[in-house]
Amino acid sequence: MNLAESLAGFGHWRSDRSTGTYSWSPQIYQMIGLSTELTPTRELMLAMIHPDDVDKIVVAVNDATRDGTLAPVRIRWNRPDGKTVHILVAGQMDGPTAMIGIMRDITEEVETERSLIAARDQARAAERAKAELLSVMSHEIRTPMNGLLNSVEALRRNPDEAQRRPLLDTLNQAASSVMSVVDDMLDYSRVESGRVVIESVNFDLKAAIRTMGHLFDSMAEAKGLTLDVHGLDGEPVIVCGDSARLQQLLSNLVSNAIKFTEAGSVSIGLSPTRSDDDADYWMVIIRDSGRGIGQETLGRIFARGDQVDAARMRLQGGTGLGLAISQQLAEAMGGSIAVSSDPGKGTTFSVELPFKRADGPAALAEEVPTGPMRILLAEDNPINRRLMAGLLTREGHQVIAVEDGRKALGAIAIEPFDLVLMDMQMPELDGISATRSIRALDPPACDTPILAISADSQPERRRIYFEAGIDSFLAKPIVSGQLLDMIATMRRTKRAPADTGGDKFNRERLNLLVEQGGYDDAAILMKMLLFDVSDRPQRIAASVRAQAWELAAAEAEALRTLLDSFGSFSLSRLLAAIARQCARRECQPAVLEELFEQSRALALVLNGEFGAVPSPIAQAMDNVVEPDFLRGSR
Image 1: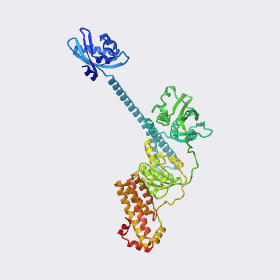
Image 2: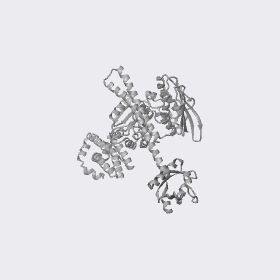
Image 3: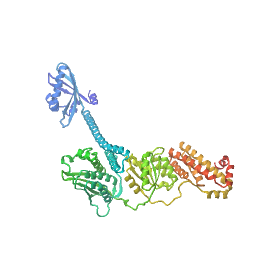
Image 4: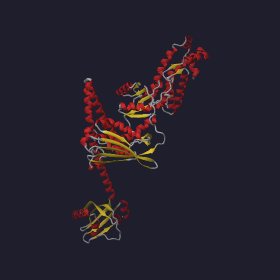
């Protein structure tokens, strides 16, 4: 019995009301923390049962005396060692005055149950918070969307120039408000889920703070406020950190300071605080002369969606997430954020952040080449393609626009570009695969800067983009000013003119072939070229589909070598990329489609060129039949 009770985790007891005696099995003594030498009594039990549960067990025992069964009842038992355990007691009558039953320790079950209840309540609270947040988001999006749609409808009526300008301003403001809400939601989702990626690059901290002042000058001026920036005198401070996250964090704080200041000034200050072996700590202080925040609300302003003045926040636009995002960004960067305020006297936010000392020279401003650029735009959305092409063309750039990655690869294999704008989600060949294929081309095409554009800006996706070979990234929707600024920062010194554009048949090599081998040999080589341009792409594709990578690479190199004997051709450059991809045991189907497309185009070019060769060669070519050069070339 003792072994069975030990394994089952319970003990048994017996009581006799007529004699006032009680007996417990060894498991019960162990369960409630008493020595087996102690004789159980009614007084002892009542003293150890939790006071709030005494009446419960007394009523249950009285009912059992009348009904014959002690229904299971939970009680709390205070052990001598100070621990409270939860006990389940059940039993039945054993004659007119005696009762037998069991006791089981259910402490672990109760704690598990409590944790499940807490988790359930937390999940319900999260659902309520999500519903409330979605309600706020719905309001914040619908309000500017109403202005946006009304402005579009008014513009469709083709108003005169005087009416058009305010409508366009309203349209721009409404679109910016919608994007602000969407950005807040995405940013908060990333930082809350721990997906924030903090980069480490060298930058000038003072220049970054100075830029913040320039960004908000016009916003402050529009409200008649003075925006001061101080602590930036002296030499540049080159640090290693994430300048983009710093700008995002401070933008939220400075924007709020200007929004909630009706008169007076806003200031941004920078000062060093302390240093350790790994980093230097810097304090950024944003101070405003607004109406301030009451002490009772200061402790909750960093909570999600908590708006200190909801009506005022809604009036001026905002989701209430900006401060929560700022706090989480500061913590993700290893720093902290604090706030102090007095109603009527303004508010001060203090952000302390650590920055590692620069591990090399910073990429500071340098002389940027100017003038128009040749830009390849790969974007499958026709509206976005037209708008971006129009914007870049108005800026003086020459733009070649294509609708998928395969055509982008074909275009850059044919002619040189200064920059590629690459959408990452496209049919035929997506931006990632197209970027990898471009990087596999011969120089200078493989060195062309690539600016990725995508609505999917999750950190893990961005890592994949950069691993594929992009140089920079811009999230959709594209803001014209951001796009032009990004292009300006990506300018590279113009390459020396390279003979890489188009297909060029080299007649001097043909003349050399005639001199060395006569008309018949030259004709056979030319006929072989026409045949291989049509035949070898089929064999390359078949080898790729069979994953015979070495054979595919060999076929690509053979055709490339033959092409190089007759001139400079874009197909030759594409074949080099295919050979390198096959060496890595990969080749996208869309790349093969581009191979077929360029081989057909080259066949037309060659037929045109061969139609103008000297008559002796043309006559010799007419006399060549396919088996003649197949026997000599295989």
